Length: 319
Length: 258
Image (cartoon, rainbow over all chains, first blue to last red; front, side, top):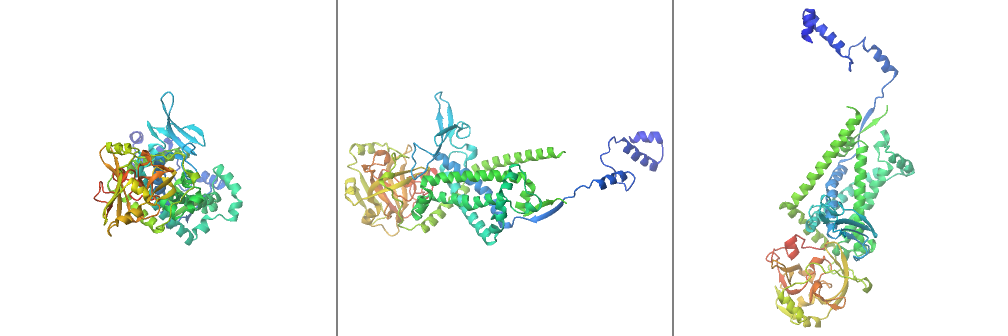
């Protein structure tokens, strides 16, 4: 462009510059951004702005999660994943569940078995209360191997009960220590009573909260500063019921603990019942983790992650 | 970029990151399992569990005893179900009439009992639950001699710490099965050398003619086909040094209280 202008005008430096800028402006078919000149061009735009005010969100930073909660939370991530996956490894050593104290092999509550069909093909069959489901590829038979849970779901991936137990029992201690640390902190700091326990008002709003969650409408602004009632209930049930349950049923599988605390057997209805409840509690954790991660993504992934890393949560108020 | 595209891209990014992270984590766990330092860190758990469980469990607390109605219809036999040696087959043919159990090692008076002599001693019968490391349980009625009674006759030396059970079953590589428990656990009233299951002499799959019942720990501690009980101060000199066949071979914990 420059040579063309130069040829056409043959003028001095200053004039050339002016012309270039003028040409450049004209040559843009649809200027996306108006140059920020004080008047003239922007006059009409200014009027539009005045007539239709753009809402300016007021951003507020709140300190949402204190350090002990953040530490405990992030420790739980590897601990729970390892406990679940090494637990599935242990389950694979005898992939059936029973009630009571004995394993009545004829009548398991649940079993996951490889079965050879008449044509000689291997299928994975999951049986729950006598109802059979073909779960080939995931449960019972996967990647050409006869195993209840597939290699990608267990630690170690190969079938090694002894090593699975070592992982499981080591991380079980860490879960207990982390759980005791969190419980002590939550009670002393009143995190439990102030933030986690649902209030009467919360509970009265439970119907609306359920409807809002079903259409994925999440609390905003001032409301987002607190946990909502479903969130509180989920945390209270997981921390107050499922976590103690999974630890106690795990201990009930220990023959030594059963001699020290025989009431555990009575409480859970036997050692095999405790094993079954342990498994159900595990999948309650899996369900909780899935919903938790989905909600973290839906309600602002980066904001949520930042608040659990640094403590600071950003809330936008509609002005 | 329009917001929709941005959201899509973010989702892709998240999916990719999570997928890659979980693959790396899984491979990482497998690498850790095969390293030397990590399993030895994990195995420290066993010592902690042993100490804590012993501290909170009264020394003579009994494992739950059940009623006749609770006995399992089928008591599965696991591990070796027949020693398969010529010598053992000879004992089976003679109905174990020449079977002896020796108590030796760190004792004042080494002793030896024939099966018939053992059956003369005061017996204990207990209906207890057998918990396999695999996860299943079975209930059976065991009759046998309290191990403490035998050891008291042999008088253990003060520094004896463990009882090692040598067994008649030998694997394909010629390694004999053995197990060991703490000497203190030998004196527990429910620790017996059993010769009957559900009112009948032990059959071969369940450890004929005599086996250990140690009710407060898992199934793999319940040594079958017992021929010799050796008292020792340390387990390091025996076979792989970890105190048992499964402990040496497969990496199971010596402390099998959980």
